[in-house]
Image (tube, rainbow, N blue to C red; front, side):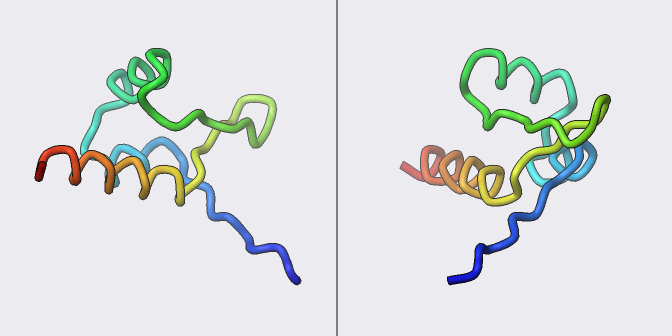
Length: 65
């Protein structure tokens, strides 16, 4: 079974996908309410696309309830 490649999103793409600003993303992450970023280099981070998509879907379910 081949491993599925996970797409990584940089901060701008995460902001676009969530409609949140940088400071809100980092605050939610600190509070444990947002997916954790992963280091992709010495000074680069990204977020897993599937985790961001699930976070958005969970927020939409919460609002709809």
